[in-house]
Image (cartoon, rainbow, N blue to C red; front, top):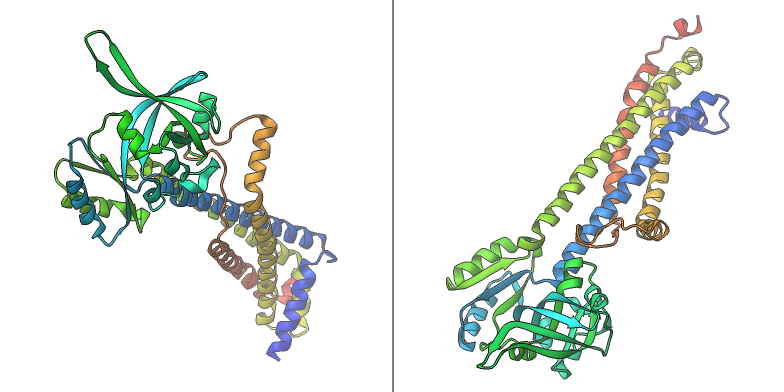
Length: 417
């Protein structure tokens, strides 16, 4: 008997939300509720995917190129002293790899212009252990530095500013000046461009030059083998603890800095924005759920005579309650289904849509000087989709509690009168 009542309740609920329903008010209110839930779910999934995209770009790309932790000093340390420091750091469980480096400021120039740059001298064989810069080369590769001592790789924005391409030459000037009795002489050297990369971060693409460590040492007259270490950790989000451990192990003349000093505020803003946007969109869905409550209440009022007839024919209050529980659940399920489809399509195409808007209106939605990347990323997560589906469905069921109880409490005699 119970199964029969449930099937009849489901059948009536289907008829109430059907497009072919004789009550245009019921169909219209159901459509409005479905539209509201679909729009809210779709926007929420798309927004969460965009936040995931920013998070992924920061963690895997930008933080994959720059060192998680940098160790440097202004003192002249010999090779043995650097090796001792490196061994102490490698003993830490949180450290994955280390690569020596020489970081100096200089000026890059060509016939088309000049720019202040950060020259990063690296060992190409060891640099791949701490950086994923190789994944971002659009021309050439980092390995070309092995066979070309006077070769350099640089960011796409810097290459465009200097007006150079693969195989062309630039001049790198050292800030040091050689003084002799006759005149002062600027130290510079001509380098061949053997690679161009594009990370998508303006600061990296327009300021960074990567060269062979031996050539940088020779140009800038650096006596020590290297003046710093680039460190990669297992957990990029837990570098502060590792930074403190390295500081405790190192001499006082050693400076230890992590990526948080450069991008920490931006990453925290992304996380904060994710929380605020998620809260606002969940409030939007709660408004849609409230709209469902109002719609069902109006439907109950419009169907008062139908409810009274069912009660007069012997329908129990439980059966009447189940009709509107089924109706609210079906509206929620249909709205969630369309919303998930809309959200998935939006998540997969939002980057292309943003690029189309930029090209059509000749604007930059993301200014590379303000944001860490110059494009709109998106990363669809099945866990986010699942969480949204479960949360919205629960809200939809809760939204039916009051209207279904109100319908069950309808008095047949009063309604028929």
